[in-house]
Image (tube, rainbow, N blue to C red; front, side, top):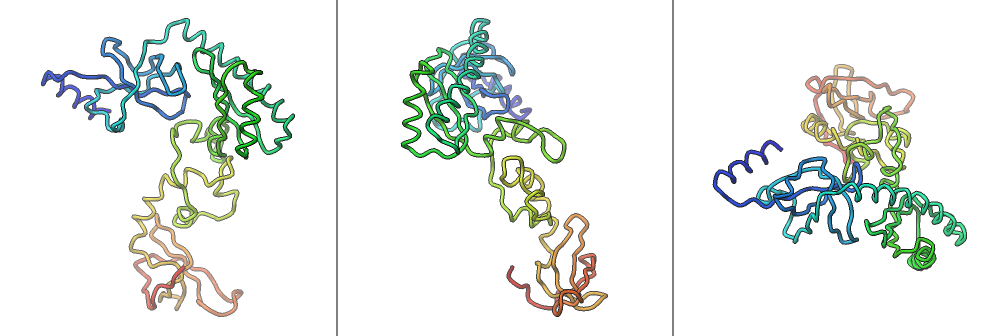
Length: 298
């Protein structure tokens, strides 16, 4: 942010006309979308604005303000405009539509039950500012035909056009909120505005237990936090012998079965072969271990 501020000041000194771009969020920890705003609006972070989206008019909160020349993530697409600051009437209408959305969830649940869609659950309903379109979020599995039938049944009951969206487990958890095993609010509901790929390899590289309760979150998917320190472990262990390598230690010949990257230690099983009950596990500093055979493929 400081870099953006410096670049903006430099552009101002050069008398380059600044076109203001704002990042707007429609949910407290939702993805931010970019819009172009007239400089006369003098928008600041946390201001509420009315914007034109692909769905219609919506009220959102400004998460960042920047000159278009220093907007790094705007892409080449034409940005939609910020129409105005949100007035008291706009905010009152937003509150009314939120309450209408809560009532709509009950209606949707009734229709889902009537259609016997047992694997589907309504999560949230968002209305555009004019109330003429409802964006319905459901969790579960819906065939294309079931979606069409449900959409047709919901239209008359919600008295508007219905856009039905089926979301995955991670988005479901993000909307519900809650606490992780660490005792902190869920990362997805607190600060993550987008989901990145998380793999079982990340857990293995950090020597984390493969027990499902240790690596999965409330959503039933791999925990997002597995990715936070992964690169640190990779950098720390880049010169370590791979798992299953045969090594010479002070206790004899053994086989690397794990490592502690942060302590720079290897967990070695000695002897490397024979009955499992006769093998013992030892920890050695990496510097005290010599690789004596080729590294086996995992």
